[in-house]
Amino acid sequence: MKQQAIVVNYFGLYGQNSEINRFLLTAVSIKSKLQFTCEKTTKNHIGESLLEPLLSSLKRLSYLNHIWNANYKTLNDGQIKACEKQELIAERDHLIATIDSIKQQCRLVGFVTISLIFGLLYIGWSYKKRSEKQKTSLLNRGDAKSKSTVISVPGKTVDLRESTYEIRADIISTILLQLEKFEREQGFLDPLLTLSSLAIKLETNTAYLSHIVNKHQGKKFATYINELRIDFIYERMLKEQNLLKFSIEGLAQECGFKTAQNFSDAFYQFKGERPSVFIRKLQQKRSS
Image: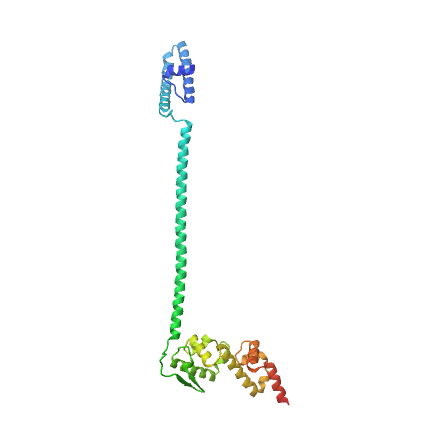
């Protein structure tokens, strides 16, 4: 309280900032000592002129401290902490709102992505169904009321009324004639022959060709080709003695089979015995 009285005596006020108050008290002490010293000398007015600016500045500083304390003395530590807490809560709420917005955008992007995927799948499925429908329509297209129900092919007569597959009579006739030519020219000896390659050669489609072979040859396409090959090599083995010296693999190549095993199986299927057994029988017959 004594220190406060000294400061108030010189500066007319006393602040709440302890550091500033200690500084002011020190300044008062220095002034007192300087005054005492100056009174002992003849240059007292010089000491006073040096000290007064310092004391004036200190007085202004003390006044500013007083103004600060007067305006903000009601803010205690608890209130300051409360303000800081409110700022943190506001920042937290803003951050949460930002995260929620990002989550909502991600969900929207995910929904759009899934919708696009399902949309593309549906378009692909629709296109496939439409293609199948068009193919079925093409295969079924024909003249069901055609006046000609019987066509003639060299060596056979075909009754179209027995066919449940509606292909125009002229198309069936053309394909059967082309198959006759195919057999005469021994096109079946090509080891790379397939249903697709033959359909292209005959200028038709695989569905027409497969159906006509099944219906009018009474067998599947692969069986039809294999039987032609076996009949071909069988007849040659009966007539050409030098073929009996061929290996099974060599005989397979002569009639269009890719492997000896496929040839041997097909030979057994159509002739009831393996080619090796058939060759041995022929050799025994000719040597006797």
